Amino acid sequence: MTAKSNSPGVSGNIVWHRSGVTREQREAANAHRGAIIWFTGFSGAGKSTLAHAVESVLHSYGCKTYVLDGDNVRHGLCGDLGFTEKDRQENIRRVGEVAKLFMDAGLIVLAAFISPYRADRDRVRAMAGPGGFIEVYCEAAIEVCEARDVKALYKKARAGEISEFTGISSPYEAPETAELVLNTGVISLDSCVQQVIEEIMNRGICPKPVG
Image (cartoon, rainbow, N blue to C red; front, side, top):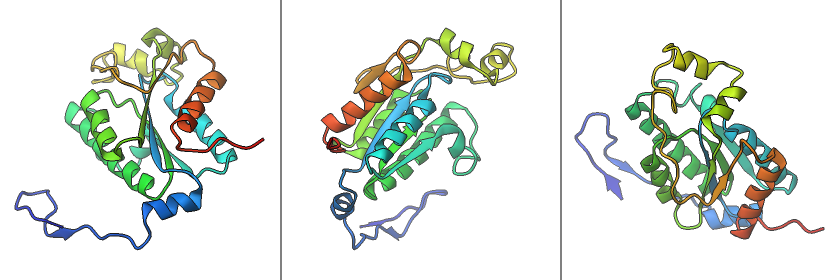
């Protein structure tokens, strides 16, 4: 199908080329389904730490994985974006498109982003399709996140040195239908990892290891 547009900044006269290798074939080669595991929560809630810890376990099971981290993405793909509402929406739109491509390659994508707006997360869920998206809400109290803040971002935000900082001067819309809600300010990392792994396996994304 060809998409056409005369609007500036919108791609036109393009065609989606289907690969000769299907997603199902890639998943069969990987011995697991492709999926997006989306970690959301305040800065300092433990999203990246949890995502990387889950990836290590999945890797030990032989799963093909990749972590998309908020800070890392802003070094390149989204280096031109700030933190206005519009820029945050575009940030998550781009990440969602990349995650979808990785999922099509048969990978389990672990995305760790504050992603403060519910509509943006729901848009990525829709991209993934039924059964392809697990939302993990890292529900840590903002006081806990501030106490963990080795970069002093919260302190700078409260002093007005950083504008549009989530939880201080910018809103956060907590998930209403997350598959997992983990109080990462109280529950141990190992326990959180175990719950995420169990959710992935219970949904048939990755088979349980033998032995």
